[in-house]
View (spheres, one colour):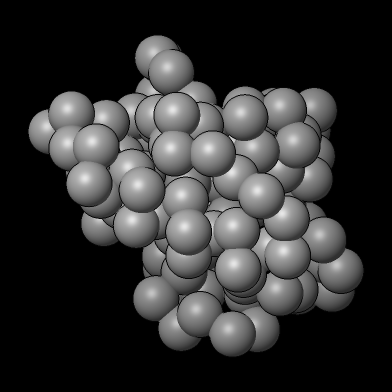
Length: 113
């Protein structure tokens, strides 16, 4: 599986936080922080928008690094992605992404072992 596919199946390569980090784009950091703040109903400062990918070595946004329950669970279970987990179909932690994002779901199911 591509290294830039996150544990949840999202494609980190298309993530604005990663793009802002790779391109050192402060304008995109501000835009992404504003959007994520609205989506999560909390303040996320632009300087927190630094990430090179969920499963890659390097900097992660604070949420992706230590708060994301999907990432924490997958690392605890030592799976490459949630697609390897036997609980994939019934996982309530993954449900918000699995059940609403067809691309992420396809990434997980197409690479099942």
